[in-house]
Length: 219
Image (cartoon, rainbow, N blue to C red; front, side, top):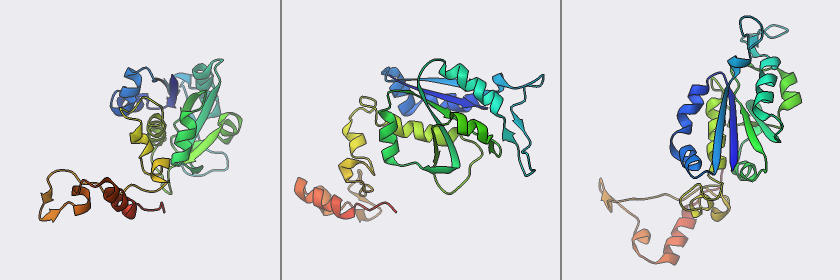
């Protein structure tokens, strides 16, 4: 069973996703279970501080290392875990990373950043991998962490109704690392546009050739 934990300032944001779609399916099949921790429960001092101004000046606040470390200790305990943080400084997350993470014999803990970022000392001491989802910035790490979790859960055998679905995803080995071909559903004609004849032929070899013709290389 895969355990995914999330340390966040907004645990309700995370929890709202864990009850639907692939997250719920994995949980119902007892192939994954989840834990969310509120970083505010580990705040420092009388006011429960979780952030502070950056040394050297600059815009925004930085998440302090002490509450992050205490939350991580409470989450991990004596279990061997793989710690992930999403950041513009991280390496680009790809399909191969989802496959690799799904096979880890460890719990996975996601650190959901906020504000200007996280104290570098915490990252250096505790984080195993940093990932970026692209050349853009969002307001917090909750969505990026959920996207990574979704991608890796798709690779856990039994989570999808048909494992071939994962093998035939864009970027997967079943499509030779390519992006999937165009898809068509009913009706056969919509707004004067007809489904390509090859897909209506019933000829599996012809259909396969057509699909391969329209697959694309990732940019």
